[in-house]
Length: 246
View 1: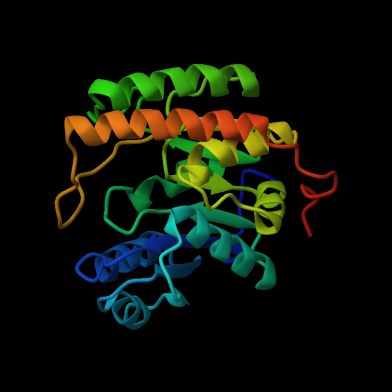
View 2 (view 1 turned 120 degrees about the vertical axis):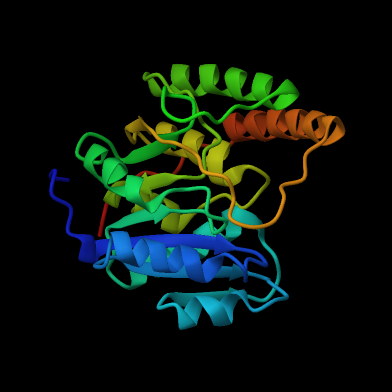
């Protein structure tokens, strides 16, 4: 892909669960920064007016009957992208923590990679992780850096850009399991021969709502994330030909 990306072939995908108070603002912000891109909100089994407000804000909406998690929502997004002729998919959270103004930085890096991570721990911004979550992130970053052959400092980031080969791969199979949208998808990409890079980004405070964290939840995260990575490494490599862009 050249340095100049055709924004008309770029799809911003937002997995959203009960984000009626954020979604219209995020969609409006994306369209203000990147007016030529497509925007797809995947309503992941919401029980509020997320879908209605997203549609009213100018986004296309795919509604899932039940909550599948971020992985299931992103799999829907990748398949939508392939069906509608998009070459690049940008994953953006629906809670306002990812800044759409930084999307061009991810797109530019696609000139050198198939998958670009917006990294929170790469010298930009003040985001910090603590306790077991911080330890887990460091260990996982070391493992994925070794696998990919490049330094990755934030392998659990949900702010990512997928180029044509990654879109083709993920449309065929995108892991819906716990942390499948981060750890397992990265392992899958690397084992399929895709090149992974990162760019530094600054994480914002979510617009509304309060994320729930506690020492117990952090410890559970560490255990579940470790298991997710082990399972990802044990899975078979993707079949040949899945990374060929249509």
